[in-house]
Image 1: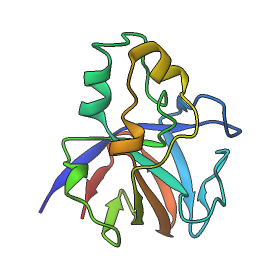
Image 2: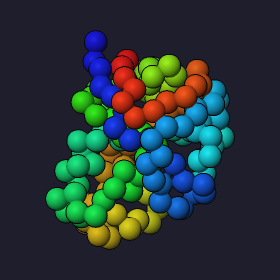
Image 3: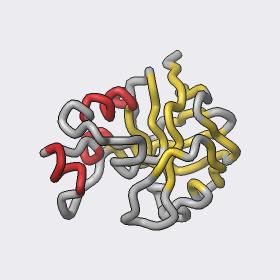
Length: 143
């Protein structure tokens, strides 16, 4: 079984505002993360990104912090590239279902401008919340 853990739990009160690590949050079934600007947003309710890939980007833009790529969850020690649409992930006591891999960016974000690259279009994972609950940094993540 593949198993990793939550490295950061990030949210922002509105779309277009940089997310910050809040350490813990509540995921609501069919809606997403309470208090996040993407709450209730269709099939892209919660976004995941590899903590290791985000760390690599620090070589190009040292000021990058959790949430900089608009990700909700940074996942450590887990190969997110092995996931397929329809896979289900346990995150703490919650259950997420992968609904989209990658995304199209319509304009270049601040990360792209600073680093010349952004990993979210290639490596971002989007999920819907199947079973809600509280999550926090350190929670286990597994398929």
